[in-house]
Image 1: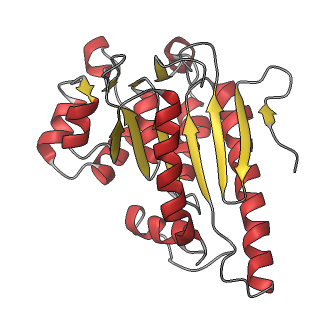
Image 2: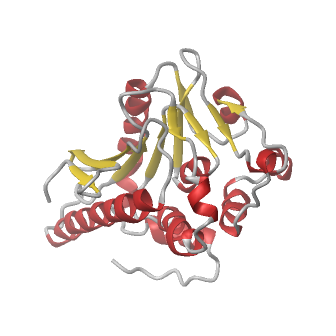
Length: 255
């Protein structure tokens, strides 16, 4: 496979890179605020995830065949546009989402489910504001790293309650799965609280905050990727996650 891979090809909204054998990076670059449109999801993120998984599985199988105990590692970072520090994602393209009855069942929910059970560790490198659907995208990842806001303000927020938009069931399911405290669930969903990075870290929504902006966030995200990419070698990272998140699914190895 040739990198960088820009998708969709005609008008790229994401770029996939492979900076080292065990790491893949997806950069969102739909305008300046990375709205999550149907095109970005269906023709950008989904095929990029396909490409990452296919490439990792090739490496994993090769390592298994060669009995290479050091092979088969892998991790994925998702980051907002790298040449700015204002937005990770400003959420869904709301006007078009509400007019498209297939957006959640056919487009966004399958993306969230795919990330929730992705076979290698996933890290959201939150390099700016992270709202609504962008917040859900980050929660669907395994780890979250964010700027501490000391150089530029950045917030996490589910603000649907403030403009009268009902949540799809997928959003509620992710918050229940990833946020254990009912008071914090209320704060996110019903109060639409705008979390600073410090608040989000203290409440367990973030795994790390860093002083700096995109470059420093990516360095920390890569540290986490390096630490946990080894856990993909067993081939069961995504299967164990599926057992935790979807109790009805059989926990059998499909590699």
